Amino acid sequence: MDRPSLAARNPLDLAESRLRWLDRRQEVLARNISNADTPGYRARDITPFTEHLSRLGGAERLARTDARHFTPVGGNAPRAKVDRAAEVTPDGNAVSLDDQALKVADTDSAHALAMGLYRRWTGMFRTALGRNG
Picture 1: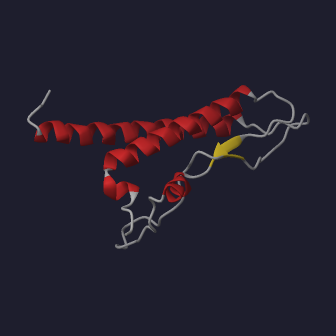
Picture 2 (picture 1 turned 120 degrees about the vertical axis):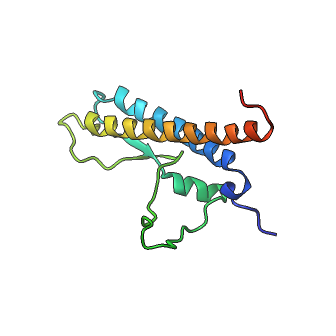
């Protein structure tokens, strides 16, 4: 018997998985920034979230069922890997603080979205139980 996907089982599970992934990514990005002056250090990032989900057995192929839908693309995830560097300093460091700041901002926005969805979902449960407070 096939196991239901992570998203099909419970949207809260998906949100929690996304939040754990975002926390891990923030740790990796913080390490990159703290090593911005370390000779020979290469920036790292984690695998995309869609790959992380597929390893958990929760990602089906996304289907584009309407011409107005966006084309499915990869996300972000917990296995750290070396990022390709656009430029390397003479001491071998390949950390771009601008790139890292953009990734941190993107991760922060994704975290806020996941938390908002989590709060709304739990709010629906409280409403269904008659606990609006």
